[in-house]
Image (tube, rainbow, N blue to C red):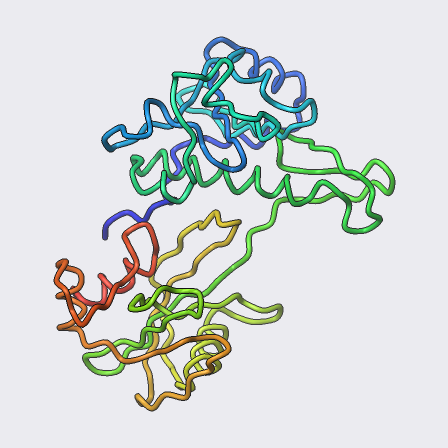
Length: 307
């Protein structure tokens, strides 16, 4: 199976070092370390915007980008690569870091999803980790218990409330994404936010007290009125928009009758394997579009079409 983007992170996360503030400070200023700046959740990339793929993450030597960050800006210890420490730094406080200042002329910033499509797989995985964690810090600057400000700790993997001492940790939301199969067809849907002609696998968040299998069955029935059985696992994908774990599954449908919940889906239909294979080959099939390879939905569809 082709590797799925945002998986295969090569870093040693060295979690045992996160509580050692002296070690982290030393590594953050070590000449061998590297820092990836993110500006408003957009990663820094080496070279001009019209650079031909593959792109290159803009990891920089310490001392180049720190002046662009606010004093309390999140700095995430990503891990070790062959003994070298890698960090991600939020420089959202800067006005135009690619156009003026120490980074001008070195590269550009690009939306993370668009950047990941043209990065080597290992770099896309590192970017996913960096983006998800900085996004979490931007959303959790205040305590959910008492509303006071929180402070980043442990290399960016914990926030502590100075007032009530409550601890807050990065969260990952589990999401099931699944193909219901019936004979030579799979069930696809178009979300209300999707452009015309774009269809994908159905998906939904796992609710408290629910298993993966139960969530798959519930979501397919709620959105399309289809009962399924024999839910089976395919693969997972960390999805840093903002921070989910996509759990890919297949399931066997009992029938093809649809009862679409139009609050959830604009449309849904059974896509025959022959048409799907044509779409995967880049052919124009009735104006239909399927997700690109960056999404696990693409790999669900491709795996089923080829097996």
